Image (cartoon, rainbow, N blue to C red; front, top):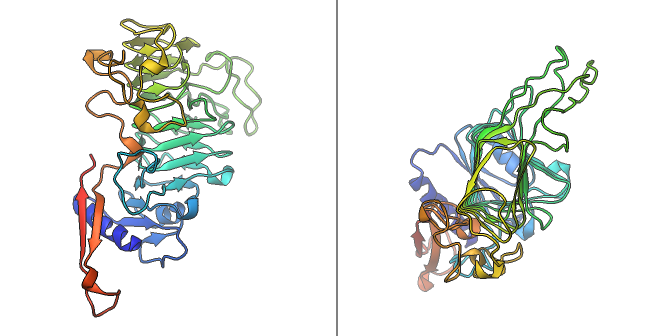
Length: 398
């Protein structure tokens, strides 16, 4: 019955996405026989697909990951959401398993190459430990995903001297965490010399939007403690290390709005960064020559930057729940009388559920969702001669 429901959902999805090319499926249940355009791993589905295609990642069997991914073509990759069982408002009667990607070593790294601009990840659980999430392409979107990056792994927006550049990235309506203390997003600031010319071109990561997320900790332009104008470029090829500081540009034009952070929001080496309408369990720290426009944030301490902030607020007075990583999405809704109500820019609510495009509970993708099904009891067993009548109810999920 479960497979029949996925086929029905795929038919609804195909009707809804009139401009779609081919739809591929990932299914790692060994008891399900693979059909055309169905694969056990995400990499295999990717390799079969063409630019512009859609990959639907079905719920993982027995919490088995669909693996890592080296993405070299523009795709839309859609999963089943996350935290479906604890969030009580979710109506999903058949399978509340998550679509899992990543894993516990470097073979599970997820990297989006520069040949895959405009790739979209939706409704997926990306769990990385000993593996990284690396974006080298422009205009990549992570929406309605759960992204957990353990200590020692990284979520990096890359800029390299060979032209890779993650400018235009969008990270929105995601549940983010790392080692229990938040997620640090790095716009990587240096790379090896070109082995032939011994030259370095400092490409800039810019025009990045981070909005309506729950739980990240900071944005940094580099992984070094040195100021941005004193990097020593690493040795590469026949070149020797740089004898003088190399100018590495700041990240530019990051918009960080309507998020909830579990810890201090750190903004490092960022020009023209906008930090507004966030709920911050801590303060805003701006380091390494950052230039930020901040305001209308709600902080549990003195915010540190900006105007019209609501400061020194008890966390328990803001949310319905405790406001920690192990609480459900629904716990981050604002309670009656919360000081975050109307505290954002333009009178919107601060935090992930503010604005007219808020955080979506459990990351359900914006595709039709089956909410109930039934079959005619007199239809008998599955046979090639006896038809079976099935009734399916579907709702939109935009």
